[in-house]
Image (cartoon, rainbow, N blue to C red; front, top):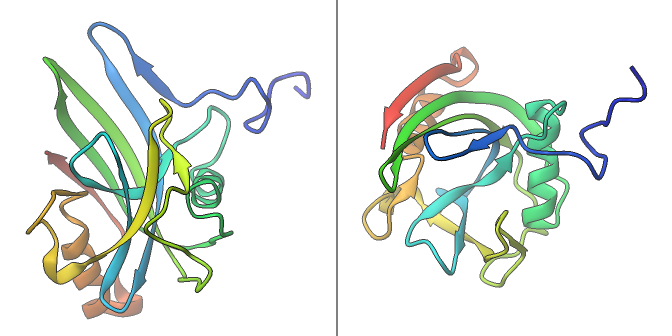
Length: 172
């Protein structure tokens, strides 16, 4: 088994299908909250906010992918503290139906996180940066995905340690 490429090898590939009929992606994300705002990513191509995270490499756990993606996008080693929810989302990409399964982990804030200037690039090379998006303004300006995140964070605040992660299915 040691001859197989590992998730950190140069041969690592995302768990991703993109062909004429199918689009599927396995994603892992970190949710960082500071002063009533959530750390979100933006890029110069898309008119929406999206969570910090990205594709899970084949053979990589979703926890390791969340750590790797957070380091790539923030430059800071963030540690997943607990699973918030699993999100199965169906959405259009052109005339195709995309299917994404994403694991969202709550992470501790770190004062070293910087926002407003390019910190990384998307999988296809578009520069991206980080912004703190106030929960009170969620969806009032640019769309923010996942749309269910404020509800999940409200439930977490209300239930505390009794909060139980769930699978959420949306069509956004």
